[in-house]
Image 1 (cartoon, rainbow, N blue to C red):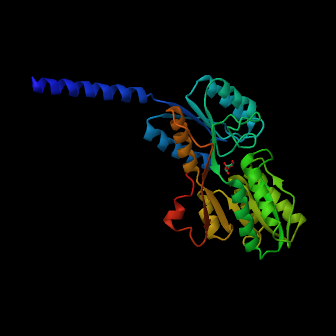
Image 2 (image 1 turned 90 degrees about the horizontal axis):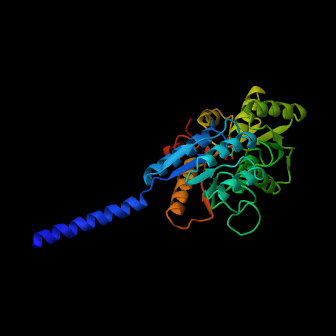
Image 3 (image 1 turned 90 degrees about the vertical axis):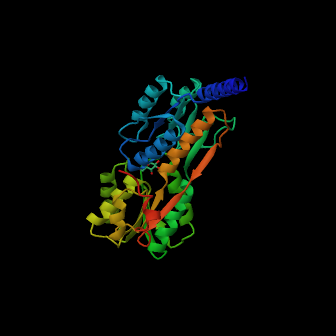
Length: 324
Ligand code: T6T
């Protein structure tokens, strides 16, 4: 009799546990819409997101456009909304133009979290304005990144001379903030002139031609800040094509694999590596926490690793080089 009771209790216990596991274990589908698909930054972000999805048993859907442009990103977003995922993580390609398209997702009851870039002011859940509805913003501190770049470039050129920012286009929260952080910090260097920003539309070839054009107009050009992967890559190529390696100094945002050679050759002084994998990981974790009834922070800041000749071979640094 005793034995039978024990078995019955055990059996009840097991089914209770199985029941609760089942209730919590709904397989969530989390969509990640990058700024563009063919960018080592977002490829690396996807890896972090996949790792987190695996850890919580969620399915990750990664879908994006081939270029960094609201015109191509919005249709991808619409297609994702139509599939009704449990949550959307997105790097909005414009601060304003993605507000209404994302509002459609929120109105359809799909939680929205922005990763890397933000909409509106990037301050969410305030109850104010038309762009506070995303639950969280998970990204690097781009103002700080711009300031780090300015200090590094100022140091490289001996705190005097002419520099400019090679940037994507206005309206992107990340690159706007990097430029702002850079220019604010440069105000501390009275002997440095910051020339007009050159916008390349995320096209490295255009950034390379612009470098040569700026140099043609300013034979005393001392440095350039490449405010994202393609801007930096292109500006560095432009410096090399102009035969100015080591003379026109380059500070790069982002760290694709090619940055290693460029640092070793002296073409690039320093690269500010973001931690895209961390952004993806915490993006999925934040979505999962929300979906399972937990509150989440409205902003999560991720780190940087500054890479230069002195540490590029250190494996704790090299691990932040982006995946191809
Ligand atoms: O710099 C990243 C990202 O942070 C930015 O928003 C857009 O450009 C990159 O994806 C690099 O290409």
